[in-house]
Image (cartoon, rainbow, N blue to C red):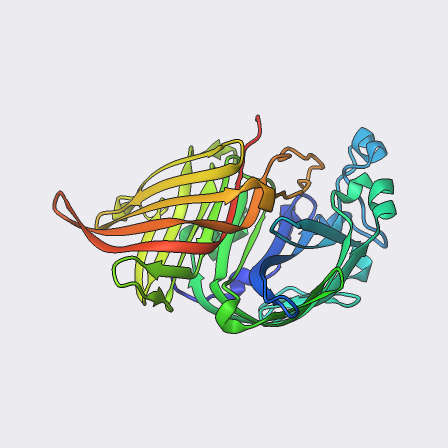
Length: 377
């Protein structure tokens, strides 16, 4: 069982050693409709927290040359917001920890000035001029303006199990943790991007919400998810389905587990899970991610004792961006972390009958959130 709601996993996790060397973020992505043109455009909004134990009145930037020389670690709340498509941006707004109002225990909330996030609400604004961005490369972002006011309804969860259990959270065993309280999420409200008005409706938002926390980032880094699927078998849109794949090379303390992914498919109310931590299900994963001149390509084959899932996705580079984070130790190793919201592709789901594979469904997929990146360790 993976569709188990657990709001305690959405709590603020930067306690113990993670307080001085850790990050915690809440990610949201969805599709909005331009009020004037009717065009669909995918957006993302993230609240990223880093090293609260090092914080104070002002944000501390790890990429400033003087801080890098002195080994000063970053410390701030970063509100990251942006959009994908041919016109794509990522905008960052930073707050010192003294400006942050935090409700760490469930139900969590994070607030700084007009920016707010909880399990049910999302509002705020970010505005940067070309001059600000040019003068502050440590902001790691583009210029532009986005405001938003949204409600969140998390429908289907991907509870990854033992890896993010209370025991493993307490002992801080993993380098990077993951929990998707809303791998299918309905968003509603309004968003404004550079003066253009967009509406967000539950039935067309194709929304997603998860969180990550830890002391470092995985490499390779893989993420794929969508709830906009149409069956090639029946020709019908699947209204109660969503898949989610994530991971790369998880670490337990300093021991890497090579090329491991977590995967889940909620197919019209039935669960199919491919989770390396549940060894009794005999999970196996093969994946290949690569760049062409114009696209990022993902091929993932996952299986357990009872089922097989084959996922083939592409996303145009011109509609993606290199998403920027600095790690809690002040390093910035991921400099080509491709991030998109317009992926398209195909997912095939099979049931195992002895040595035979029986097709459950063959699906076309759009509005796919997708990430891929690697760095030299």
